[in-house]
Image 1: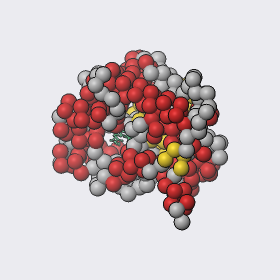
Image 2: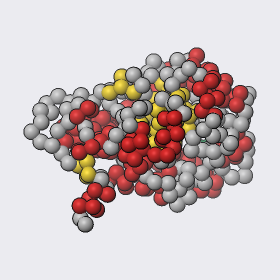
Image 3: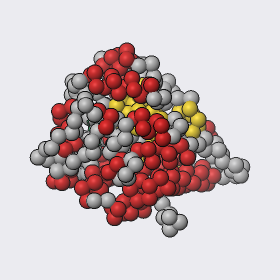
Length: 361
Ligand SMILES: Cc1cc2nc3c(=O)[nH]c(=O)nc-3n(C[C@H](O)[C@H](O)[C@H](O)COP(=O)(O)O)c2cc1C
Ligand SMILES: CCCCCCC(=O)C(=O)O
């Protein structure tokens, strides 16, 4: 493991460790995969404005999300089907999250039940949900999450229908049994992508802003909305009374040619005006990316694919290594930018592509 020097190297190790169908599922994205690539490339167009002669002998990366302390603003994004990557699935990922003192957002599409994940570690966990046509199924999962000690519900809103992931269609991708829904709704054999077949049968494509009230009526837990890409929707989320939003394009797996998340973060932050936390995911592969997201107003970032690549390649140690490498890089970026604490990171520490283009006029 010592030979692995950055998070990107885990992707090739995961490719070697996994059957092609599963690697394609994890690494895949919608159609031309334009958004997938843009998520990463857009970070590389943001440059730093480092400050010098600041005492950076001690760096404090710790922060709080919804009041819960974490060691650094780096959390685990919800990703489904971890048993495709490791026989013990999400229980292993959750242990790594606990060891790194961060929050894991557990997907409702997990291969382990949400109770098994809860029992495996006492880290702070949020539960991500989809709303199914059968509202009773979603409601039951929310109730179970409350009972199992999950601290927030993350409602994913960018999947009224599943995006076209062509590799999954070609591979006739068969997802794991969805143990959270056993006896309630099942994955069935299909001609193309089994994930798509399940989604088209189960999801409620009529979900809309009024339904936030319904969700609020069935839980006292804080509600975050994941999948916001415009200031218009960010404002609606604030008006709907949610407790946080995640700027996300589902890692480029839904609407291809959606903008890279880092390019829309600032306009979202500007309308939210600090009323609720704004998180971001999509393409975060370096500690420098974490810093850029914070400088543009995010409270924390979520990591998707690198976590499952770490899990597939090296199990719990792999997930821990992914998080630790990002933390170490972030710590160094803070030091080299002259920011000893999270609160010292400001908008003035980065220069976006827009600013660079304007300054060349
Ligand atoms: C294999 C895989 C499964 C995913 N499953 C879910 C899911 O169940 N629920 C959800 O809200 N997002 C899901 N996502 C999206 C992630 O939460 C996140 O938005 C995205 O992966 C972030 O981009 P990144 O992979 O570039 O870090 C999934 C992503 C991947 C790659
Ligand atoms: C019921 C929706 C299926 C979604 C599958 C998990 C997911 O979000 C993904 O991107 O894959």
